[in-house]
Amino acid sequence: MGACGGWSHEDPVSGQIQSGLGHLRYFATHPYHIRRGVGRQLMERAEQQAREESTRRMSCPAGLNAVSFYESCGYRRMQNQEILIGNQIRYVIHLLEKEL
Image 1 (cartoon, one colour):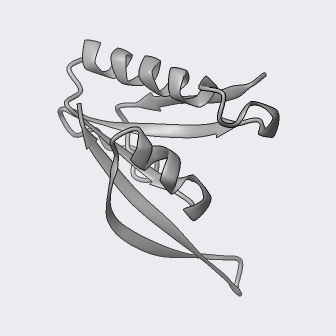
Image 2 (spheres, helix red, strand yellow):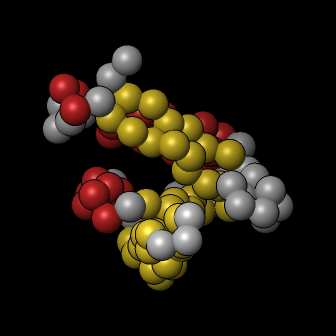
């Protein structure tokens, strides 16, 4: 498998649905397929499906290593959120959005 990912109407944290808002979920590209267009093709397909279901805006939480990919697809950073993993590890999530 070269890449995986999708989207949902449901917020991945709260499970709530907001009209017109979709959420990218679990996008990843295998290292052998990075920079070959596989992730972008998957993104385009997910966004097309979302538009077909009347989604007007997409939201995406991302680690720093993925931010440049999402920005190259037209997403923009909205805010950063720090989460605690276990009792000691702090991790920054970058929240991005795109108008479809």
